[in-house]
Amino acid sequence: MQGSATCPSRFTQSPWPRLAAGHAIPGTAPRPRRSPSPGAGPSRHGPAIALGMRRAPGLPAGAPAAPMVSPEGLVAAAAALAGLGLLARRLWAGRLEVPGDRDEEEEEEEEGIPFMAEDGSGCCRLLCKPSALAQHLVRSLGRSAGLWGGHWLWPRWPRLQMLRQLLKPPEPEPAVARELLQMPDSGLVALDWLVGPWGGAAGGGGGGPSPVLLLIPNAAGQVTGGLLQLGLRALERGFLPVIFNRRGHNGCPLTTPRLQPFGDPGDLREAVTYLRCRHPAAPLLAVSEGSGSGLLLAYLGESGSSSHLAAAACVSPIFRGRDWFEAGMPWLYEWPLLLHLKRGLSRYAGSLAQAVDVDGLLGSRSLRELEEALFCRTKSRPTSWEAYWERNEPLRDADEAAVPVLCLCSADDPVRGPPARSLPLELFRSSPYFFLLLTPRGGHCGFPRRGPGHCWGHEAVLEFFRAMAEFLGAEERRKGLPWPRRWGGPAVEPPVFTWQRSYTR
Image 1 (tube, rainbow, N blue to C red):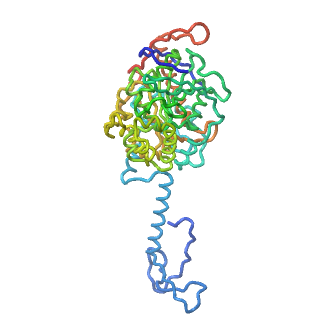
Image 2 (image 1 turned 135 degrees about the vertical axis):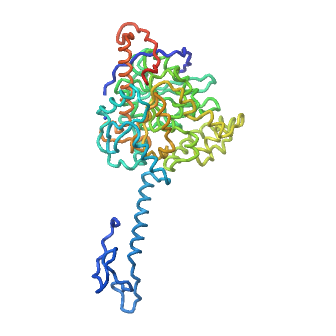
Image 3 (image 1 turned 135 degrees about the horizontal axis):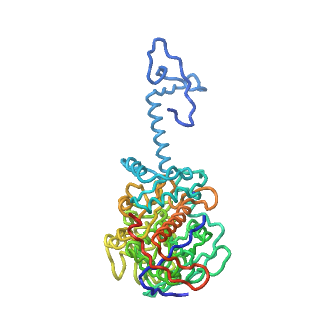
């Protein structure tokens, strides 16, 4: 099924219904003490030990003696082993630090509004510009039972959390109905409607009042188990979840020798306009995961008040695309992602040969090399790395965003990097539309918990959308705006809606 998007840019919106549902070295035996020699004075290292040579037990009388170890040597050895243990722990946890980072991170973790203690990772903080909307969000998140999940067994292992959330299949396996949309240049993108594990018709019919939730995978097009689980949780609560697949990703045919750059929202804009035409009376929301947030943030900035979105959320977003590519990522994340991309691109080697050097593309040894081969070293319009990022940085137009955006981040994210360098804190302090929910632990797209759903981050996102609907409904009731009929009878044209500055002051 193909469709094209030709709707007016004016955004009409009605409030959606309230959605239903929180100092010894470890492992070593103590050395037996010897009685001090007569006349020996006190020592700060404990009882004085006679230095000299002793014979190891079981050796014959003529065997050479082994040298004694001095107390200073024991202290140095203990310090070295303790340092190695601490280094191994930092490496395993993904928190290897550069001198000076710790103080900055500690200061950042103290900033913002503390409002809840979630499953073993400490106190979450909401960093935002003070406003009536921010106060309402704090109250909503603080009283949400879904964010108070049980303590997870390994809260300090962010890479394990990341692998669990990315690789664990959803339960139950969802049924999907696909639509193909043709772009103005004849390229194709795919919309996968989640219709539950029971099958059924996609979308629920045009003009339905249920909110449409657009799910955007990471930049490699991987539809992870976590993203599908979020879609299923949303489906249970009355949303219409649909996954946006870029050109050539996740089985979407590549009909032109052109892929979508990291921060180019052109195709996403066409898909959003199509969804708005298909569901004119339904609120349209969006959630992105990981590096896919670059696309959503770029779209919100470029579109401003014409984005057609009522609210958006980013789970473990990448804010600074160029810095992220240049810094590199842990091999545990980068190599599987690189292999996934190469495998998908190799299917279209013949078509891509018209535009890029395919041998150089498939021979890339990092995500940066792959990005440069695809979009900078092209045969028709080569460009520099710097010029590419001037057009594709996610936050290049962030000041123009005009809908509420929740960014759910963890301080121990091993993919994004240290908060001191990877979080645009000034944006959250100054913009009335951006909200940073920062937790000390949670990994990259992890945020695990015990119990149904297995991810408290999903509950935070859905609670954010519920809070936005509740706040908007209260504002419209206060101003006496008419509410359209929702069930039965002919559809009523909803009142024109745009976010008012007074909501965010």
